[in-house]
Length: 190
Image 1 (cartoon, rainbow, N blue to C red):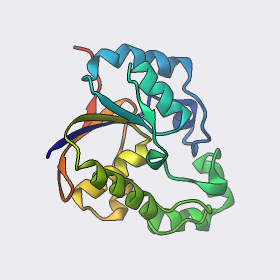
Image 2: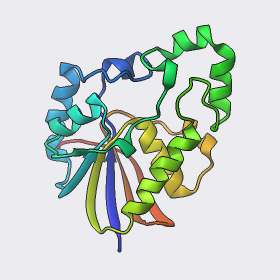
Image 3: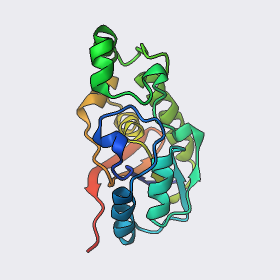
């Protein structure tokens, strides 16, 4: 069976603009308006999911999706860094940030490592591959990166080389062990 999965990154929010580790802040009015304007650009999907974060749930709703929040699609748990900006954390814990940026198995913040995130998302993706037909998930940018790395069998350190812009779509087509990836398509109304 072949599954067609579209991963959509959430609309911009204050946390994204401030380069802040998400603390479940909601979308601002501009993010909601942008997602609502792009709703016609997203192909209909009978099955849709969302990361449990407020910004992903709000983006899915604004896009007109009836999406079920799934805990397994949560963004990386950032422990004590949650809600802080990267600049603040780097100033206070420079060696810890350096380890986190260079070692995908490190979790100096007390949360989840990027390798663990990739394993969790890869397991979800492989289980999904037994289904067929179109599926959509509005998920955090780090979840998009983890899914792409898993699909391509790329090394964990490549995560830092994938830029996931707000309201873009990544399409995965295939099944466990063999995925094709179409990257970073901006949602747009023709």
